Image (cartoon, rainbow, N blue to C red; front, side, top):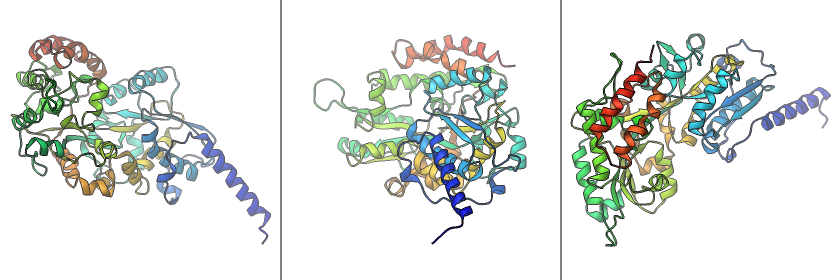
Length: 466
């Protein structure tokens, strides 16, 4: 059977464009197993109609996410450009070390080396927006809003990427915290489980269980199993903020722009964390190395661990059938029950050459029903569109931990808290180790003394806010 010459020419052109495109983007390992159907609706649904579909340009992306995590983004990026801008060359700089990312990115922007799409974190959004480094997205949203915006996005995450009433990023996840517990360790120690479907337990209950679960198994005088691993006190305290709020404390008075680190409730909560480590010795944080702490729960050395929702995927992969485990809500404090929530977003830096395409890509990846289920499955995350929460785990994991949505998403939406990430928060955060390591790392100083010293420095940073 002979094909008309024009069809043969078109087929050759298509193959050249497709192959050439595929070679322009470094392909993360393991992509093929996640590829599904290759369908796209009319371009007017996903594009603004302001950019020539045959444009030849280079589109640049920078992200802190590693190769495995970047699979989910690669799939969406590949499909978007293949269908709507096949002649665009895409350059991706992924896997930038977290700490390096936050020094590298401002340096690039200041030098005029502006990428088109960047990853933004809620702890940094206010700072970047205040310094004029981000492009407001409001005009884009007004013209072509993401599907479900804003009612089908987690409100806390939408607000996290606003500054002075403007939207600077579209959130791509909802990251709440909760507790994981080793059922096998509880059973062996004869300790009752924490409640899995209610919030009816307290920090006192947690401590009582932790004491009974902290044991010297082989009788050599050294602790082999610990009761609880509280959230690390690093990175400016955002990881322990939910505990501070549970005790009724606060780091800052946002309205008055005052540091409140010496608030008695803040001191009480901070001292409780330190006492778990150094007084009651139920938390291995000062004993184990950073690497061992990361592996403490999956290696069966810790009975309870406070961590984020996406930890479930890694735990299941590593633990397998070594022991039984489950999840439960955070305990209540003396004042209230709270849990950490946070997340990240996709944003466009000011001065981006291809800003219109960048917004189209953001909207496509974060609200397209054909794309976002993969973001959840591959990333083991609650995607920012609430109605797609079932894709956070695979079917087998949901059977194993049926209370997963309740513990993390439902309670997180109700009781979630995050500190005030004011412009300049990174500078305050950088001072945390200097003042709080003597409390949480070495145990050589009590919380009241350390927070009193930290107070003036925190206020100095706040005073720089215009």
